[in-house]
Image (tube, rainbow over all chains, first blue to last red):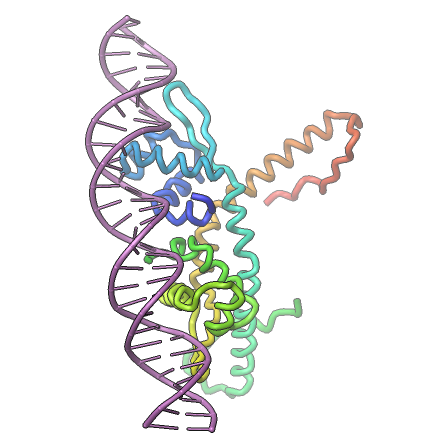
Length: 121
Length: 121
DNA sequence: AGAGCATATACGTGTCAAGGTATAGTCAGG
DNA sequence: CCTGACTATACCTTGACACGTATATGCTCT
């Protein structure tokens, strides 16, 4: 299974993670809320556990699964360079629109309302 | 291919995206830098294009591929609830360490240096 | 027009992962 | 101890995808 990206590629696994973000859950609870078969849930949890997305504690016959942050933080870190990329794009768009505002002397019929140019970063 | 998560599950596709974050590239340039076969590059670019990760402009026989922000922003958005989760965890850890600092009167040999407790959010 | 470069696509193949069914292990309570 | 609830695992089948090889398409320049 290798990478965190392959792990979160599976929709059911993302659903499980989204469930666990609110609070820890037992296998049976996940099974019922997500309408998946028990073996399927267990197998996905196995993958998530091996990849460090979740950990489990024992409560009698149940196992309570809870979220662990590290792998998703890894995804977040991978995203960082792209965030810089797209915020640069938004800035470029804003500068463009600002120039259009200047060179379009009150000819608008639908009023475009935006904040002024951002301070230099 | 469906979801953005499946698209970025593939390591070569992530490599292509990382390449494109600096500037647009032709297929041949990608091929050489990533040491992939030309059909492989083209096929991955097809997937990326269909999913909206990239767009291409024609430059004579070449096609220049450039990044588009939306799909990665979608990933970023999916991550949001989990960010709240793990920042809560970090806060809890910090409060815990702060309490330990108080109740451990100068017994450390390796100096732990951290900023003070965060202001209320 | 023809040669050559750059890119896209078709087809066949191997691999792997996801789900179902069946079964095994484990714990609590009578 | 035996039963029933809860969870994990084994085995099998199926489908999807990634890659390689071969080929098609399109553009430039002479």
